[in-house]
Image 1 (cartoon, rainbow, N blue to C red):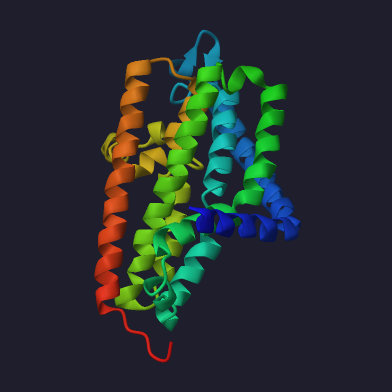
Image 2: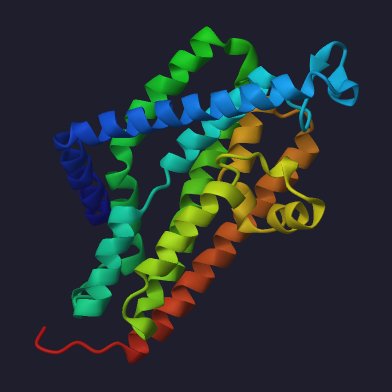
Length: 275
């Protein structure tokens, strides 16, 4: 464990050396939120003319008031940004293609856990930056986020699980490089697809029923939707929330097993010369 914590610490130090990344990331979040606000403001304004969407004098879309929708999108964008793996996945793919995985096979270090700490360490600067951003949102708009301490605790737990699930999915895609050599296109397609299907820009509850049902029973539901819903709506039904939590933990174990199997199968056919 000490060696993996050392990897995490080194990546924290490196992340702090590139503070401009956090500034650019923060600008991306704020600009994305501004664009989303303009879009949803127009949508809610157009729905004001339709009486079927007005409940008690207020427009609701998918059960959301406009302010609740903006808060949901705001937090979804942040949570999605916390699990970015452009750098880590590119390094992993390059090592497999160039035959540099041998050092993990001949030394007492796990390729899976080594890059998990890399994954967390690379994004650590965003964790600190967005923590203060979320804190400021809680101060100015306390009625739209974290209605109780239980919702805050539940959000932290579900966020940690979502980060781990996200890493496992990236790891599985990266391991395809043992067979195909270059799989960056798969990772890019996944990242783009998750902007929509993961609920980062559109709440999953607004999807058509067949797609929504599929997503709710897949690990995709726990990447963004589960932690954000916990933060915005709180834990109103403890039995349902706890059931979802157990389901997310089940996906953690299943995906970990898949990662181990596919990595083992990949190393069997792995070749490295001159290493």
